[in-house]
Image 1 (cartoon, one colour):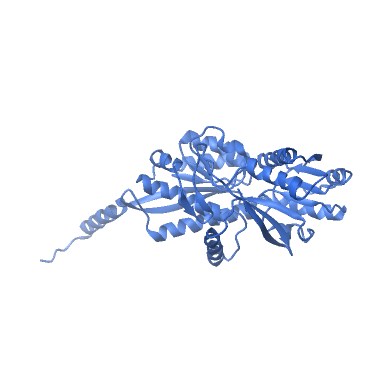
Image 2: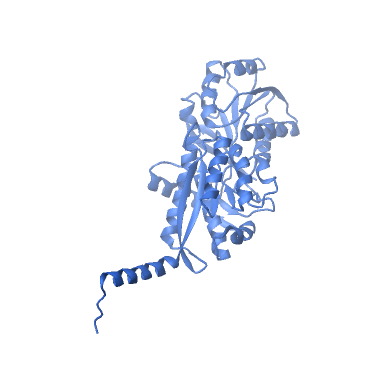
Length: 381
């Protein structure tokens, strides 16, 4: 028997069917924060694309959480590498009821924002903030997937003293939480290996003229100059070092160890002059997964990976893996599972968290530049 429905009845049936379908779909909001404006915008965009790649793949896979098909939504915010803007967008994400946050890029924004996420009980995974303070505040919601500045700065300090045989080592930092922190750990590494810092100067993360501080450093005839800061300042600094005739080895952490440094320095750096370290690194069989990711990233977005996009990608996937295992996207329910992450196989290597939320056995990769192209020296742990 054929049943005919009048328009009101048909609308009611369709609404019922739609409601049944939507009831089986779980909306999961993942926040991402990085500098999409300002001098670090190229790095912030790189991170955001890493998040977008992970979200797109998860939606294509049809991930099921607690018996419901999950639909992932990316809520991306710009903190412009500014602590005040960072806390403002952190509160915005909390008010939007996100299920978790990936970010921030910089330690100077991650640290103040972490309190807001902690107060709200929302897990935060930073793919790139390396200041030790981030995970030493006692917040159960804070994690990172890279080694901290104690390891990074200390390794570079020992390398400057022992491998490069630096006799006159000058240090400059940009006064940010990241730059100051990595510079301090570099100094400790130099001192611990019998070296000596002979010059200490400061600048800002927005400076463009370094004539006075470089002139002061030049008087000490440095064979190594370490800069704690980002590539947007390191590039012009390298140009001005060349203009002043300072031919010292230029060292720095992950903030300047980017594919963009060559263009930012306008060809001022000589082959092998720059030695830098990136928090993270893979070797052996794991290298293929990273290489495949870089190829897929370039194909999808038509741009090369700058620095930390793979770590953002892994951060999203680690967070979602905890949700799947917990059977819930509720932060209160999956947070304990996330904290127990052990042996997750990502494109950046194996991820396990310690009691503070730091990655266990974090790797570092040492690089130099030849012909303007970044070249790996070694992976160290």
